[in-house]
Length: 220
Image 1: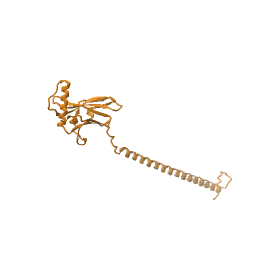
Image 2: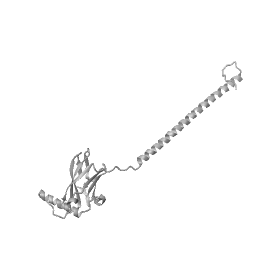
Image 3: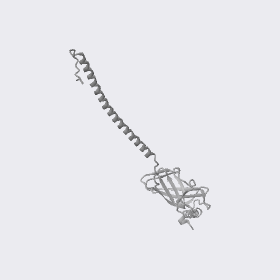
Image 4: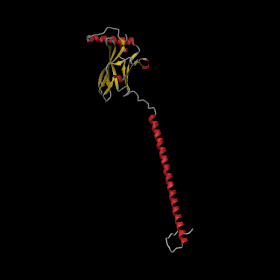
């Protein structure tokens, strides 16, 4: 192959000049082809890296979607944050229905505020501590505010369950106490399955247990 010594010299014969032109053109074309091959390799490598990154991102997004949409176990009910202690049982209203007074204690470091309608209140029966009678019991208080580490009184009513005994009206303290003891005996004997109450705060996952305070000392 002739050397490509392209020189624009008018003294050179025309065939040599033509040969050099074609030779120079061939070299440029070869270099261009080599450069194109290098760019193709770079392009293919970049494309492979991009596809790999895309697949990785797709798998990551799919995994995140699966993880975020999977069923999450509910937080356990906390029955120690707010506790209740039985005070007495008596009656309320013109129909003389049953009422139970308790003292709540807040064991947390936060004030506790809740509307009573936002609490799911139920009776608790003796069979395995089962819940029963949702809707048959209600709080007398419309709203409960319990500061941190403090106590407050709340009343639970059973509007559908009346006491057949005589009502007290402005009785002396000792007579009122006797009346409440009579009501306790009535509850123990007439509602033997009743073993207290339970209220559930779904927002805070609190369970407030209202213990039975009439059965052990109210039986005759």
